[in-house]
Length: 385
Image 1 (cartoon, rainbow, N blue to C red):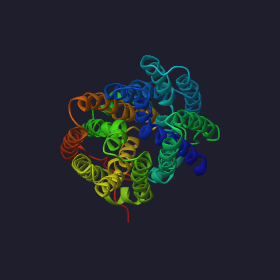
Image 2: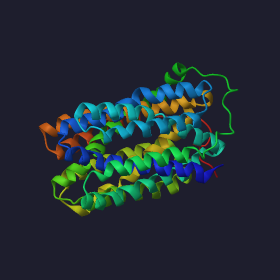
Image 3: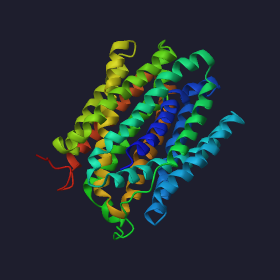
Image 4: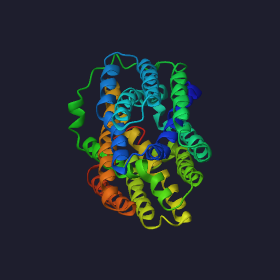
């Protein structure tokens, strides 16, 4: 298994997210964008995930090499993003972001499927590779705050361009998986989607990401409103991902021991607590720091357990479309709807009210998980001696 080559891709990919998510809203605000317009920009990033990953997943499941798709998509995304250097107006920025994210979203779902294929029967060890993405996120989230405070928000565009180039270069060194899926009998996605547990998982993922949208789009702006410096904001983002890394180091043991369903339910409970703390105690650095450590649950545990289940439900030649559906419904539709809704809510209410809405949305996901989420009857999710 090409551990370091797989890990390097995750490092650069999530290092780019570590620059984009915490600071993109601040950059747009420095250009004069309103809260509503910022929400719409994040909605575009999420909205392309509804369609784009499934297009690329369909191609991969019908014979196109997964890593070839990752390389092509990463290079095209890099070229598209350079459009931000030309004009900074609303409509031009919307076009650039839509084009960039259409190609960028080709990469991760197919790379996830390729990684799990490389892992073979040990796909519960996925988190030990994925943790390098979290390390990359920390590096940029921690370092860009002080740099932007010193040199201005414009440095973000240069950093993102370099990181997108790093993603493409890392993809060139990753081999195609030796575990083939071409010989396996094609599966009808409609058959898989009729399973109540699959429907429940996708609904939960949608609601979970809709609840996270105010965090990804406005958390930095929220903290800045209460007097936090860019350096402190960067450290708080990094703290959340440090907690996520610690979880990823343990998830390969936790999944066989506790099962994905129990881990998802626990993560939803802790996520509700996180949003309530964020809403009610924003002026307390200590409480906000504590809330940030719960990112270990709201993203780390939830994502690793969900990826595990998706891989089990969508087997064989359905893997690419399964990962694409998960990405499109959760990060795509959930993230897009949540970003637009939070942008509107931010103009009507204060940020604390918006995070209470996030807690309510997550509570609905928790009810669905308790009532409808089930695991496959055998395999790695069962307890092992």
